[in-house]
Image (cartoon, rainbow over the protein chains, first blue to last red):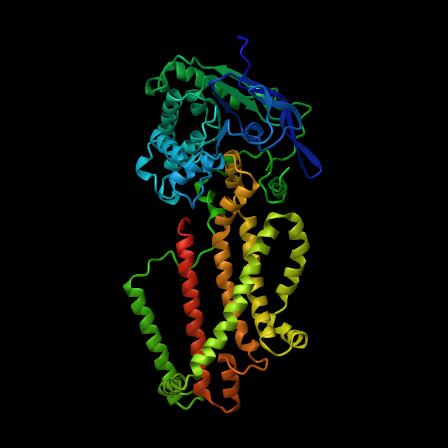
Length: 270
Length: 290
């Protein structure tokens, strides 16, 4: 343990929602510390509150109890140091790729010349330079998500919060984008919190995999992945990967014993 | 807390704790961003145009046949002849101009008021609560039923005519503008917020463009309502106008003039609709078509 403070620190966060007469506990006393430039994935069954966790860190929701700190300061609303990438891409369909990437630069009042060149740079980083002036409707799902990644990167956040960004993509595109994301990340490191329901994805990308359990949402297990390993096809097919994958898989799909915690308000989620 | 947070609390917002993975189907992804659109998906080549023309010729032929068979109808040549006379002495142009002016003023005012009101209703819960009952109430009253009241309250000059047209256009447009604002994808608003946009920016750069397709559809419906109301509005002691001319012709069993009036209204309405459709295509070409 070093004395360096955590980049992201979630401290005893509980989030409950009113659900008719019941309350639904989306997160129950969750604590997570994430170091600077760490790549952390969060995996868990649906209803484990992983999206809620991300929304709290993004500043789109506030915790019922506990607190979320970024660089030691409590989160109050969205901020430019935290970029968010949504599963549904959330591109503005009436803007071109370039205009989408420039959106955050305009709201943060970056002068026009710099805006141009920064947008250019990040569009290139995700390999969309040929489509810079295309509208989102003409792009494939994978290209849209790359555009969303460029848009988030352009504001130069030190933290990237990604909520199942590849969830709506087909398996092939997903693998490709995982590799591209890591490539982008290794060239331009940020602290990443990546939410997924895909065990392979969680293991492949992470320095650390956080497994969550549902009802109430809580941290169930933490699995370290050696950051020194090079993330490539070889790793994906290696016995080490298979072992890690097994471990995470068991954590996610066999959460016996603790799933029926007595404090759980087992309100229906659907 | 901003107004956006309050908006988020309305029912229909995805249940908290539901992970977005459950909406993973790409088919449902963009449903809400695609506003209503009509008749644009199929390409219009030369062939459909040919079919359109053939259909018109056939229709006129059937009309002619009925007229020849002794039905109380003028024949096409009689109508063309009358149109020639009415164009020649300037009556048709005057009438069309009078009607168009009424429709354009009523429709222009109607949409000019409807769009801001629709935005207010969609954006602020308070405005919605205050305004909605009135809109819903007046929506159930046909604008024509307002005519007696309008005449008594506003006299018999242009004001009541324009007012009734205004009301028709306003009611059609306000509902769809409101719907457009309410239906703006929350993820899109969240995306703007995390990119540093504040309420004013979100409104101008996300809500307005996202609801434009709805507004334009509302305007087209509003224009239809405005035309539909015109003739009846011109029953109010008008001195000129296509509706007045037809009404007048009715007194003399002057069927050709009635036909000229009907066809003129149809053509003018169609032309104005095409103009709006063109605007719609220009402004909302970014929409995904399915």
